[in-house]
Picture 1 (cartoon, protein in one colour):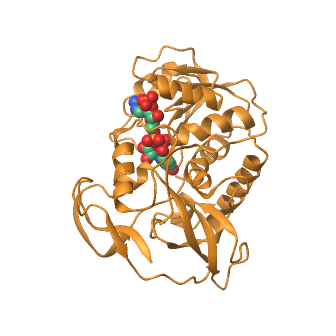
Picture 2: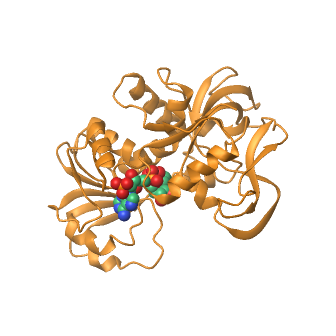
Picture 3: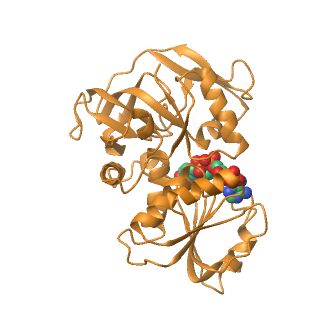
Length: 331
Ligand SMILES: NC(=O)c1ccc[n+]([C@@H]2O[C@H](COP(=O)([O-])OP(=O)(O)OC[C@H]3O[C@@H](n4cnc5c(N)ncnc54)[C@H](OP(=O)(O)O)[C@@H]3O)[C@@H](O)[C@H]2O)c1
C-alpha cells in the first residue's frame, strides 16, 4: 500500500524529511478496524513528532492523526463497526499514524462519519473535536447542556484547529459568551463567522474584563503571568500545550483559579477503562453535525496525500497562523 513516512528526523525542507513509500498492508486483529483512508487532516502534533533528532527508524514511521475512510476488515473482537462503514477518528500516537492507504485503529476511539460531510470535511474534525470537547466538558466541567449559559469564556487562539471547534461547542452547546483571540483580519473574520461574540488581538497586551473560563490553545508560557488578571475568582483555565519552563501556581491561589490539563491521546495511550468514551463522543458530535448544530472546520484542501503536500502542510502549521484545518484527500 502507499504511505507517507520517514526513517530520519530531518528539517522539513530536507528531501528525505517525508517520503512516498510502498509498505505492507497490515491485518486487523483484536479490536482493530482496517480502514481504507480517503482523507486526512494535519495537526501540529505531526510536525512536533517529527522534530529533528538523531534517531533513525528501522521501519518507516508513519505520522498522521486525523482520518476519514471506509472500514475494509475488522478484528475478531470488533462489535461496533462492520466492513463498508464510513468512519472518522484521530487514532493513537503509540501506533502508526493514518498517512497510509490502509490504517489500523482501535474501534473504541472511532466514530461513524457524519453522513452529510464529505470524507475531506469529516477528516478535519476528530482530533480537535476530541480535544475541545474533553477539555471543556470533561476536564473543566463546563455544562454542555447550557447550565452555565451566559458565563464568559476567553479562547486564546480562536481561529486555529482547536479554537474553530471550541468556539462552536461553547456557543452552540454550552451557550457561553465567547471572546476569541485573533490577530489578523482573516482570523478575526473566521472566529466571528463561527459564532464568537467578540474578538481580542493577542498580538497586543490583553486588556479585557475578567472571564469565568479561559482556554489557552497556545503555549501558556507567554500568558501565565496574565492569568490572574484575566480570570474571575473561582474561574477555570484549560491548557492543552505543555509549558516549557516551570510556572508559578501560587499566583492563581488568591482567586482559587483551577487549571485543567487535556491530552486527547491520554485515553488511547494508557488504554484507560473508559477509552470507548471517545467512540461515544465522536458519534455524538457526528449527530450534532448532521443536525447542523456544528459544522466542519475544513479551511483548505491541499490536494492528494503525498510527501510534497504533507511538507507544505507541516510548514504552514509550524508558522503558527493557520486558520481552521488543512486537509489532504485521495491517493
Ligand atoms: N493536548 C492536546 O490534546 C492537544 C490537542 C490538539 C492540539 N494541541 C496543541 O494545541 C496547539 C493548538 O493546536 P491547533 O491545532 O489549534 O493549532 P493551529 O491550528 O496551528 O493554531 C493556529 C492559530 O494559533 C493562533 N495563534 C498564533 N500565535 C498565537 C498567540 N501567541 N496567542 C494566541 N493564538 C495564537 C493563530 O491566530 P493568528 O493567526 O490570528 O495569530 C492561528 O489561527 C498546538 O500547540 C497543538 O500541538 C494539543
